[in-house]
Structures are given as structure tokens and as C-alpha cells.
Image (cartoon, rainbow, N blue to C red; front, side, top):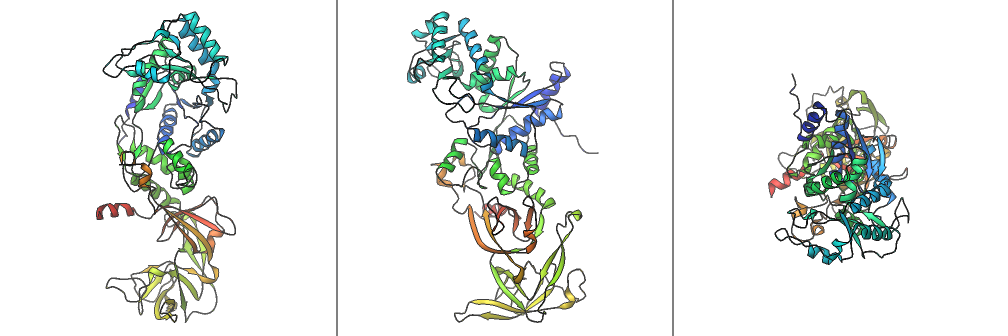
Length: 553
């Protein structure tokens, strides 16, 4: 009998709310700001919000928090929708905070009429000074004494575009002595004459996030508004607005955001990497963006599994990126087609093999019998890896060496008979012989060898470019590392092999297929690949090589 998985603290809250009849069904939301591409940290939030709704028969809205027209673009909206769908989720409704601009404006008017908001002409520096410090109460200025009618007239003129940017703001009138600095008369509207990606030039006053967030949740009847821990201090303002407006009481809950080793999770820093040319766009396979991971070949299933494994907690911690890579390997091992690709070729000539082509059968995936078999051309001249041959072998070297035998994967046992060199003493090829009775699947030779090599037929080889991606940073905790985070970029995060040789089956496969290049790692076809030039990205190595490096250090 399998042990039932324990509930996380948010699931416990949901179950209690449903059990007591507080709600008959739940509604969650995923509310990204369209000012960049989503990253793996967002994937955790997506899986949580959509997963809760799915588990408890509720629904999830996708709402774009587009209240800052300067940084937001339709490109980001489109990429976010693509990422959510790729992860395997579909939203019940697609909303935008900008859908609610008129309603949010009217909410602000209600607060003004109640004497709970006022227009302030102070500079941002003066406002910051007047707020005091965590140990010293703030003090209101003369603008806080304006009457509701004065404030309403000024706010109307702000909307009408009569004032320049930064000249006035609308502040909630709460408590300048509150220990929570966010309650010390926070700004809830500012003037910003900027073109909005959806509303154009209709508006020149925009709500602050803290004002738009809770009211948008309330408008949509969100029952469980789930945020990361940095929003804990914001919850009091969230509740204050809802209470004083007398609207649907959405409730905010907080969980620990994802922090992962060798990774940055800041949109600002990711944008820097893109703009300064450290990476090749938001979907560079080294990026922590969902689009980057998709391009690198990470299956959506493995990201969902990773999010499930790390769970939902109330305390921040640093997750080892190795766990994500483990989830990727585990999934790819099940689905990846096995193929042979030689990265650094050394030619071998099988002198006793006829000058013809033999087609050998090999499994596409030994983990999945339904994947079938493929035919691989075998001929007299083959490529093997240079580092699979050693002229003067060490004692426990089981690959190819003069007088030594190895098995060629899915083919025959061969023996190295002669090393061919040029005038400068460089090895140009190897002359070998094969044992006809040693064919894989029907071996009657009685010979046992310890080494098995992958290979490609020279006459049938397809040229390919291989991009070997590794971790983008060299330090575990990038966010807390000394100096500029860009100082820790891994100079070896991308290595390009321009002329690798692949078996011809790769030309017939689907662009969506995932591969295990035998003995090399897991790979996928890159979007820059063409019929004339195949380009493959390494998704992940066969084993965690970084763990060994850390142990050495």
C-alpha cells in the first residue's frame, strides 16, 4: 500500500475552507507582469496555482499585471501565454489589470470621498523622508489636510493630463506611525504619460501594484491569492483596501519563492544578460527562462516533476540545480531516441570487410520497446572518437589500442592492427580487422571484450553542429556572491563543435524528438537547424559531472 502524500500548508488551508463551507469552489490566478520572459521560478508558481485549481475542481485565471506601460510589451504577453500552455496548463479566463483601469480609478475615488486618500504634491525624496524610519514614526505634510472635494478635483485633473509626470501622486491615508512602513500613507496612483500596450494613450494616471493587486483579485472573486514571501508586508495594505472599499474579500497567502544554485531569478538581471550580449536572447539555452529551457530540450513533464519534488514551504532555501537536471535525465531516459554521433572523428578502415554497406538493426530506446528499431549503415570505413584510441594504453584502458579488441555498438568486434601516421607523426587513421562471427544479436565468436564504442559510417555520415551548454555561472549562490553577478559568468558555458558526424537516421527524425547521443548526453534539435545544417543543443549530460568537480575542490 503506497503512502499517501502529505498536504502542503496551502492545500491544508484550501481543504479547510472547502470543508467549513467558506467557499464552495476555489479560484486562483497567475498574475505575471509582462515586462520580461518567465523563468523557472514562475514555473513553480504556475504549477502551484493551476495545480491547486485542478486538484480541487476550481479554476485559474491568467491575469497580466500591466500597470507600468514603460516596461511592458505585447511580445512578453505572447511569450507568457506560450510558456503556460507549454507547461501543460490552460486558464479559465484571460484578464489584464488594464481591463480594470476605470473600475480601479473609481475605487480610488471612493477612498478620496471617504477621506482615506489625498493628492500629494511633494517630491519623491520628500515623501521618502517624511515616512520616517522603522524606529521613528513618519509625519504628514500640509497636503494631507486637503478636503475630499479638493482631492477629487485634483485627481480628476491628474486623469485629464493637466500635470506633468512626478508632480503629484495619490496616497492612501492610513497610519504614519505604523511599524509596517508600507502602511505609512502609501502611494496608490502616479502620473505617467506613456503609451500603454493595450490602452494606448487613454490613461496618464496608473495604479501602483499594491493598489491594483488586491482589487483585481476581488473583482475576479479570487479565493486564494498566492504570492511569494516578499509580499508578506504588503498583505496589510491588500486587506486595508478591500476592507475600506467593502468589496469581495480575497485573501493573500505567501510561500517561499524558488532560489536555485548557479542561477539568477531576477528579470532585471536576466534582461541585463540579454541586452549586454552575455547570452543570445531570452531563449538562450543557458538562461533560466522557461523558453530557454524549452529550447535546451527540457521536457515540460520534468519541470512539473521538479516543482512537485521541491514542494511548497514557508521558509526560503537554495535548491540544487542538480535536482532539476536529475528530473530532466529521468524523463529523457524514458523518451529519448538513441543515436550515434562522433564529435571528434578518427577514421578506421576495416581491412577484411567487403567494400559494401550492411544495414544493422538497433533499438531506438531500450527503455521503451514500443519505440521500435532503426537501421544503421555499416561499412568498411568508419569514424570513432579520437579519445577512444590510445597508442600506448594504460593498464586498465579498455577502449581501442594497438593489438586490442573492442565491440562496435550494435555491430562487430574489431581489432586494431596498424596505426597510420602522416610525415609529421600525427595519427591519420587506424587499420583494423573485424570478426565476422561477432555480430551483435547473433555473436558466436566466443570472444569477450570489455569496451564498446559508438561509431558512424564515413560514407553515410551527416555533418552536424553540436552546442554543448553548461551552467551559466560558476558560483552556487549567485544572488549573494561578492561583486557584480556578471563577474561569475562561466566562460565555458557554451562550447561549439562545428563538424561532428552523425548517423543518417537523424535526418529523418521529427524536430520535436529528444535524443540520447550514445555515451555523450541528451540532445535536441535547435530552432536554427536547417536541412543543410543540423544544429543540436546538449540538454544535459548523462551524469552529473558538476558533483564530481565539487568533490575534487
